[in-house]
Length: 103
Image (cartoon, rainbow, N blue to C red; front, top):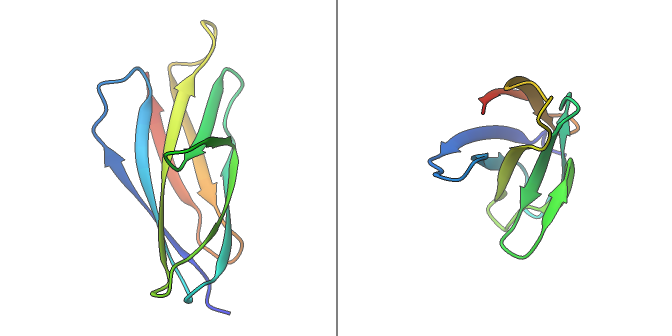
């Protein structure tokens, strides 16, 4: 099985949370589980597909070309939470992608 490749693209967002597009490339129809790892207390990282948001993890099946995209939102939920965080998006067999968020 082909190891998936993860990529993040910052989406411009006027909202009070950071929004990213996560692009995944692998084998056609490959099943991939994405995880937000190392998210500190007071923050939630959710994968959102237009119908629902899944906090901290998301299962997807890549299309016939081996591609998939999902939105990732990082939301600061507590007044005592740090304003600057760093966490990773991971998937089995893929190199993790790190991102920094300031809110």
